[in-house]
Image (tube, rainbow, N blue to C red; front, side, top):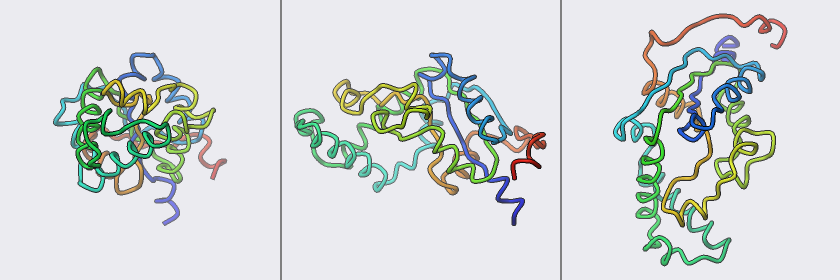
Length: 197
């Protein structure tokens, strides 16, 4: 069991804005400095169908997107009906999903399989909050993303937040199976593994 804890896997995608801004090296550097291992890596230009499979797309997930949007509009005193044309959270979620697909197919992405102790939680901590205005300085999104969900919604587009990271172990397993084949994965021991844990 102990060795499995050291080998938890997760997915990190460097989104088109991160690739276009030349942030690939810095993202990889932050992952490796944390003591996590990159065991698979590739650059791809996904189709809409391929990238759509990366997201749950369930009613619950779509309504979650819509609820976050409604909360954001309320916080900033904006009229969701006027801005989005609806206050139905599922319909809002479907619009946001379409913007997300547009964004994620606007250029190449870098897919990274990461392995290590509590890899899912560690990577989430490194990347920071999904919403750039809530991401702490020192995180990837806090340091490199200045976008706002309010501005993104007003411009009818997804939030440009540099990276995607799996939210939990089950999500990571699903996403990793979409992006990588068995032959893409490489196993090795980092020199400092015996020292770190």
